[in-house]
Image (cartoon, rainbow, N blue to C red):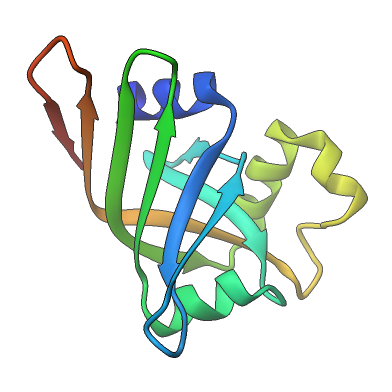
Length: 131
């Protein structure tokens, strides 16, 4: 999992795909990634469509590219409403504190469950990492 975290963190931006209520895939850029209690977390706001889509269908996939290799990470996202999980995310992304708080009703952190990451390139066989 640490290799997956390091890859995503180095990319800076990743794209998270969900499915809307009509079955239409939706993709958007994200930048938050954190390890807390040996789980890989992302962050968003509960008021956003992406949050509502995840709660309805927690299966997601994210993708990022570092210029030579790309990573696809699929799995289920699980909401963690604990203040400690939110605080850990916000400490690693202090700019988010302008919009979010660990104690507000909007901040949402989610961790990957049953995750499969595939790191690929045109030069080597894909590497599969499960956690």
